[in-house]
Length: 173
Image (tube, rainbow, N blue to C red; front, top):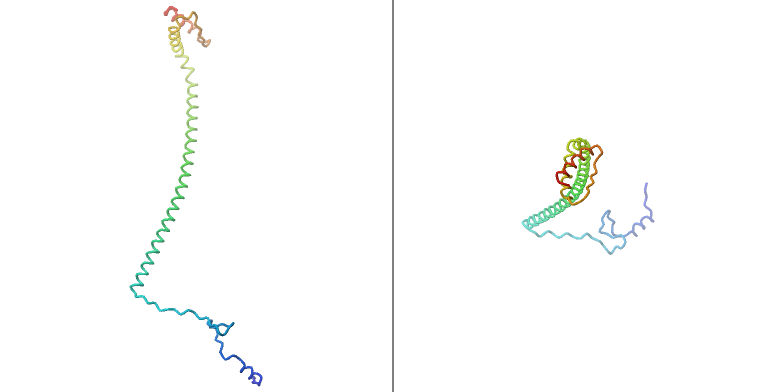
């Protein structure tokens, strides 16, 4: 049981006269004379039409800012897409040039292979005619020269010699 003594009574009397209130922050515990109070809110003195106009204006400004931000983001994304597309097209064009060069090389190799196969048979059949035409033209142009030397393959020497003599007698060489 609790009993009050004279000492506790004097201690209660010496306590400050202002009672402490819990969680009331408008009191300063450092200095009892300075009180920090929250600023008082002034009542809103606007008409509902003005409030609606401000809301509409704010919403329109926010919508315009959002549209501009979306447009800027879309433009940036489109720019990045174009850069990536340019790189891809350059790569495709480089590959196309490489493929074209490879195809040209293959075409040349194929043409040479065909010529190697066809040329011996063509020369055997028509080679003498070409040689005759060259000899005829050469003898006509070099009529004033005392001597003409013609070099041919040994397998065609006899045939070319006969034709050369026939052309020379015909041209009076």
